[in-house]
Image (cartoon, rainbow, N blue to C red; front, side, top):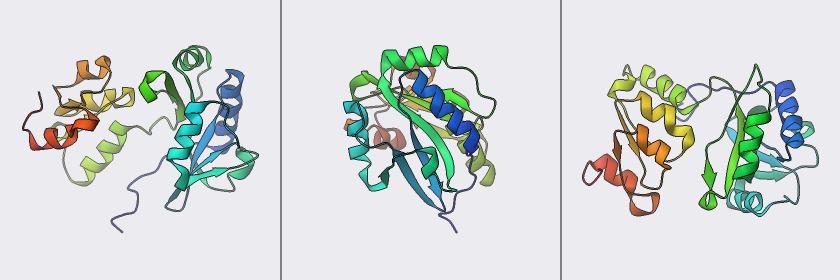
Length: 202
């Protein structure tokens, strides 16, 4: 089946539960991405308390499910991602104060909605864009050196640094542009098409 996942990485339920509690202790309200078969769902508590989270849920409404109890509603699904969306300052403080978890990696994809809010995330230690790219290139008997990758946020840093040609979107943070080989136009200005067409990427 060409649509089937090549590899999956998920968090143990006990680990995810501990992380949810730890997020709440830093005033970051968690939600979960879970996979049930090939379907992905976003589980969240009703009536989110901040406007950025409410906006994110509205934008992803087709996969969202409000629940009274996050961990109690997983119901055997694989937990892919523990996430919170909070102010950038609050996320930075959380990343500085949260403990390390042996079965998870804490990170941020960076900002959204103008950068006032950031993602706070916990994923499997071997779940990253560069790990996914390694799995794909290995399947096709290619190497990362043969690969062009395009990214626009902090979770793209390792991937852009690892490939033969890393392209940063024009709207990417300066730290992302700094590791890229080239910078293309922004998301709103056909940057991906320009980079793939190798016309005006700079």
